[in-house]
Image (cartoon, rainbow, N blue to C red):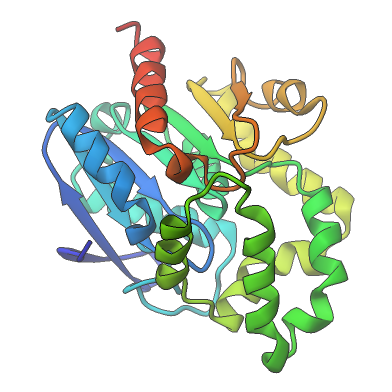
Length: 277
């Protein structure tokens, strides 16, 4: 999917974005090393399912057609999403409440933080646990290879290959792999908090990131293809009131691409239930 517009984040970074359709706005946010194109099968099905949707996609900073930056932390990427919502004309209080946010992997963390920062209609987080200790252990074990330019690419390839799961088709694996553009500076910037910060501080940062939900409770769905572990639903509900967590067994890191029809049916039903429709 080609981008039809550019906007600028508050720190001057150029953010590429697109919209298709008109009506209720849905913002889709991709995962690390990927781009808006990863969501193409979902975009097509959303528009076919409901012509009354405005489907907005973007490339986070350092990804796709967006510009590079000096910082790639979560707050900066939340700013990317907010800038695009504003550029699309949906940032005033009344229209922001109509925006549905959907994010995968890194994008799931970004939309979770964005939904706490501004009132929105709903948040869907695809396969991104916000309990980050296990992922921190995995990254720290691979840190020396991640920081080695000669090993970086193979480490990223192995990481995503291990997460795909048994149900993602060969064609989808190839398509997502073709979209992926790993940049070492970007990846290390995104993961800097996990690589350099003690676990208690990371947990406190996540709690602070989610604190806004106490002021504006928001329908929230965590949809996983990899089980986030025992107690995650209860942990999340203490931070995001009424959050729903479900796991699609064996769907791996890309449940929305393993079965995009089921995924679109699920989130449309979630939106209808969250608004009383």
